[in-house]
Amino acid sequence: MRHNRGATTLKRRRRRHDPMRDFDRLPPALRTWLANAALPWGPRSAGRAFDRAIAATGDAALALQELDRLQHRLVQKDAQRIWGPDYPVFEAPPSGRAPTAL
Image 1 (cartoon, rainbow, N blue to C red):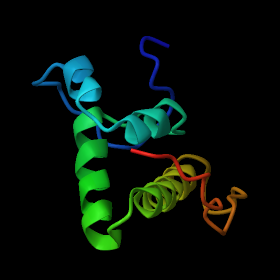
Image 2: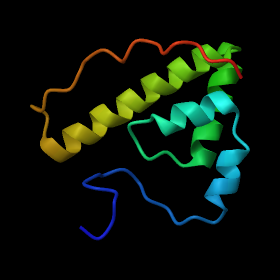
Image 3: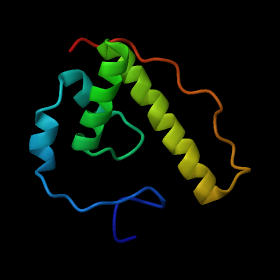
Image 4: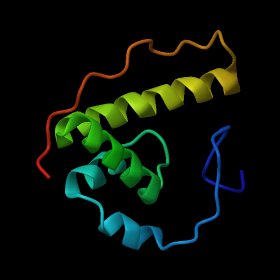
């Protein structure tokens, strides 16, 4: 294997920005979430998703739960494409994480 991405059908893009600088500008709670994420989120896309979730929920803890649900849907979608529709994937999104302060 030439890259550390593994088998995935998710989109790949070239970086046009410094990902470490973008990561450092994220809120601490989102940086912690990204460090434990199941998918290789880019800091800019994670920041945009987090901002949308904050706008919809008005709460950082609820926004992180929304990111958990979004990530779970992406994992389900990718698993079905890679291993087929019979691959056992959890039906319910993971329960919410413990709230973290921003």
